[in-house]
Length: 283
Image (cartoon, rainbow, N blue to C red; front, side, top):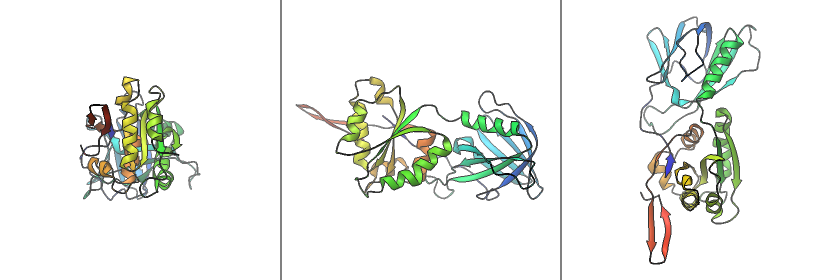
């Protein structure tokens, strides 16, 4: 059973970016076709320092270099981009906000949402960057279950404060269902249309995500067993999220938006009458 999350790769970031940095474009060589393979942009930041931006296609990193200072932003960390509609002070640039979610240096399992603002001389340049970043996002709809009664009863808050904004930045199309009774999620997942949804996200505790896993395992469509299941931890213990390294709500929302997942072992418990349950928390 796929369960979302990433590896323990440590991203390298510099304080040069901060939370909000504006760069100005002088020249752009850009190829929007293929797998995000533009060559180089020469940018000038607001301090007048020459900044080069290029992509290493093999390492898949966005590299910002200004003198001896370098910032490495893995393209996997980029959540989305948004054109800035407010007019520039000088009125001669086109701005683009690039949102990314880097791992923290001392605690790589925790990610923080940050923004980098780029400025271009033409709408064409900005559009090419925007479309290339958008093209990297996974296609398909996500089904989100919100269990307002489970665990700490913070599922609605987690959705509105974390998942909804992240999905908006990443332009993720989704449907949301609030649970009304016990086994509601399992019932929905047992009849899930696999052609309609590419991922299921459960906001709640371990019991909430277990319902999704059991429901997909009982779905008559064999492809349902390969639908990724994600969790925003809103329970008391959140054992599964803790073990998988997605116990932080921003981190969990990031992986849900990116559609990133890893295999998850599931154990079946049965007796002479048949299968009792499928358990993933203890694996």
